[in-house]
Image 1 (tube, helix red, strand yellow):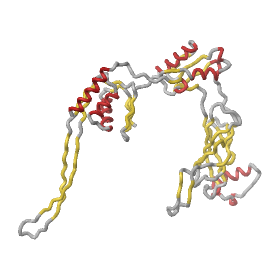
Image 2: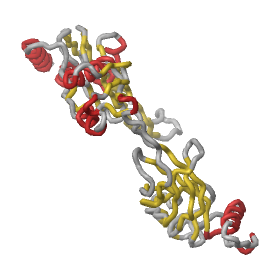
Image 3: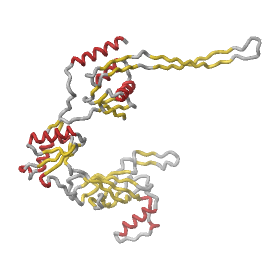
Length: 370
C-alpha cells in the first residue's frame, strides 16, 4: 500500500512540475466542419403506393383491393373485386429525402415499407407513386423494383420457417424522378448566414473574427448559433466561390468541459478542458465471502435417533484499508483517473468517485451518464 501511495505522490509531483496552462487548446478545424450555410437543407417526401408481383406474401385486407381497383380505373379498366388475387400485392408507404439543389430529372432513392399484414415485399414492383412534401405539392414520382435485402422461407406454422433481416421494408435505388425543385435563395440580397452545429458564444465570436480577418468587417455574430455575412461586391457574381473560401478558413472551436461515463462498459471519456478543485479522495472496499460446509449430527447415546447431515452457512466480511489521495487544484481529470488506477481502483470505482466529486463541486465539467 505504501508503494501505491508513493507512486501517486510521484505522479502529482511530476504534474506540479509541468508548466500550467489556463486550459487545453483545442485542435484547429475548418469552418466547413462546424457550420453550414442557412437555407441549404433537405426536404422529406412521402407517398402511398402499391407493390405488386409478390409470390403470395402480400396483404389480406380489403383496403388493398380498393386501391388496386382505383389504379386500374385510371386506365379505363373495371375489374370486380372478387377477381383480384389480393396476396400478390401490398399497400406501402414510400418515403424519400429530397436533397438541396437537385434539379428536375435527377433521381433519388426511395424506401418502401409495408403498412398492412404482408409477410414480405421480396420480388415486388412499386407502381407509380407521387411523393409529396409537407406543403402538399408533388416533388417526385417513384416507381421500380423493390430490393428487401432479406427473405422469408417457409410458413413458420410449425416453427420451421426462416427469416433474414426485415423483408417488409425495401429500397429502390434511384427509384424516384424529381419533378419539382425547391428554389434556393443563396446569396439573395447580398447576404448569407452560417449556422453552427453546436451553438456557442465563444465559437461564434471566433468564427466572425476569422472571416473579418480575411475579408474585413463583413461578418457579425448575431447569436451563438448564427453568423451573418455581407457578400463582398467582387463576389456577388460568384457566391459559390465565396462560400468555398469561407468554408476553408481555420478556426479553433471552444467546447464545454464534459466527462462522459458509460456505467455498463466502465468507459470514461473526458475532454481536456476539465478543471478540478483541491479535494481528498478515499478509496476503500468491503469484500463479502459466503461459504457452505456440511456437518454430521449424531443422536444422543441410547436413543433411537439416526445420524443426519446439516448444511452450515458462514458469512465473512472484510473491509480493506482506505487509501486517501489528496489532489491539488492544479491537477486535471486525467491525473485523477491515473491516481485512482495507481491505488488499484477499478473502472466502476472510478465512475463512482467521479460522481461523488461532481456532487461535491470538485469537478468543473458536465458529467454525463449514458
